[in-house]
Amino acid sequence: MMKQTKQHGFTLVEILIVVVILGILASIVIPQFSSATAQSKAVAASSIVRTVQSKIFEDYATTGSYATTLDGDWFVEGALPSNPLAPEQQSPIVNYDTSAASGDTHPSNKLVGTGGAFWYNPNNGTFRALVPAQDTEALTLELYNAANTSDASTLASTSD
Image (cartoon, rainbow, N blue to C red; front, top):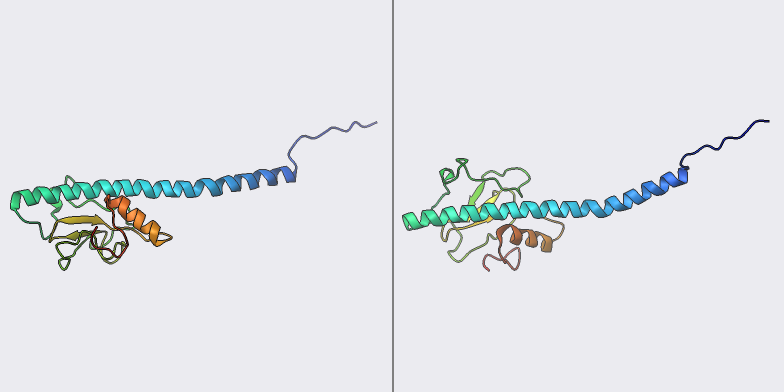
């Protein structure tokens, strides 16, 4: 008489259940990871904005007027820092908005694009990081405000 040996292993159904559970977990974790990545880039951009703004104010204290262009020699690297929120470094790196009013503390276009990676108003020394468009205008505005530690009320607003 032949003995039957019981084989050990996973059935196809058990494997499919594990794959489905892993898919569900991935669908929860990946968006949170993406959000954390965007937030860390916003924090890095905020630090750059504060650093550049500080250099602008130092120059103003020395010269008595706001610089018409930003000098890369103000920075250790010998150039303006790049915007971590810009997917590719934009050219020009800074949009020198000479037509902005002295009361404008935000650009009318807050999105990274042909206008550069940063915005500078030489009439009042305000420097801002531009951001990529997000899924909604509210998320784009939230990212812009986080990157610039500002409180713009809409994407179109030019002052607080």
